[in-house]
Length: 166
Image 1 (cartoon, one colour):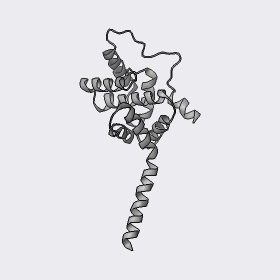
Image 2 (spheres, rainbow, N blue to C red):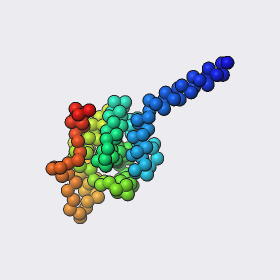
Image 3 (cartoon, rainbow, N blue to C red):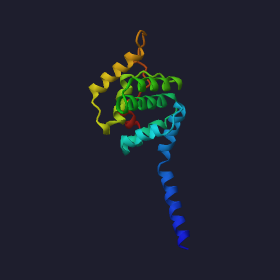
Image 4 (cartoon, one colour):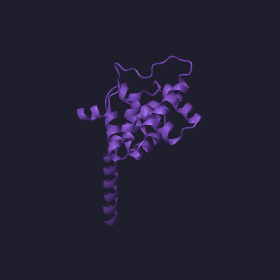
């Protein structure tokens, strides 16, 4: 009799945990599948974002289309390249991952601001992050004329405007 109660209790905890973390798992799976990466990369970023920002990130990924997925991939790129490991090899690896997934791996100013909104719990310095963005973009656009920051018709939605709409 006790065994049945224990099994039932464990079953309830497992089902409850799966239901509570379903959105985060689906978001990390969608992004991981597109980038052809194990979900641990996205899940570790979500855990460091904090509960509120992670929920905002997963809600943002629920939006249809390529733009939210691309912007989420850039947030992951910024996390991996600017915060976790800024080595040359890591930068090249993540640039390759994003380009193989069909995304532009250059970081616009709006995408950086979006990432800083999601990563706000880590309190990144805006000036330092912008300098790193410029260095990163310059590294991969050396000798190529590319406008990584189109000011008109931008597909990036500011985090504050997105929050106001939802």
